[in-house]
Image 1 (spheres, rainbow, N blue to C red):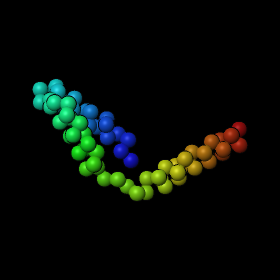
Image 2 (cartoon, rainbow, N blue to C red):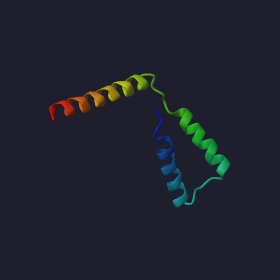
Image 3 (spheres, rainbow, N blue to C red):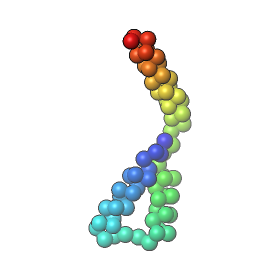
Length: 67
């Protein structure tokens, strides 16, 4: 889904800064956009998220009934 793209790319950028290999901000932004575009997108993600939400709701309902 790309939720953690900024975290992963930010960590890589932090490592570059620590190693003194930082880039100007325009190059950083372009590098981030290229990184995000290169990540594969999965078409089944919305379906899986809906299924996960249904299972979470079902578990809450079962927990409430069991008490």
